[in-house]
Length: 150
Image (cartoon, rainbow, N blue to C red; front, side, top):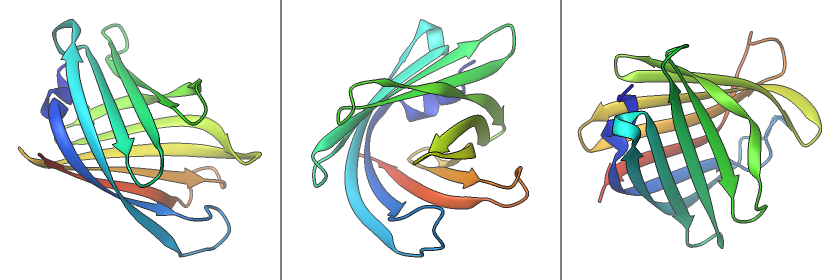
């Protein structure tokens, strides 16, 4: 239940986001971020706020561990929209890699969404988001965050 303890603290984040997901585009937008993460419930909850100074909005992530299922639920909210995105991403870690999934939509298209968290060391980690529109046969990565401890 302490899987996200590694993320506690302040991080500099290099974002790479695909400009037009699910269109065949390979144009990426790169921009900075700064994340401040805290742990709660003895490690069974993790919150972080990330600011994107060049984009004019912030994001908030709430992660909750369910001891019955032994899985995490990850919720996201953006200051640009002011709502908690549902459904949550659900999954867990196997060693230094965590995978989380949910059925969602992107601009009206149903997608299977995947988050991958990779712990690369005590001061470096990566988060990736990908969409699948073909039943998880193929994935298009559309957002990568490389984080370095500040």
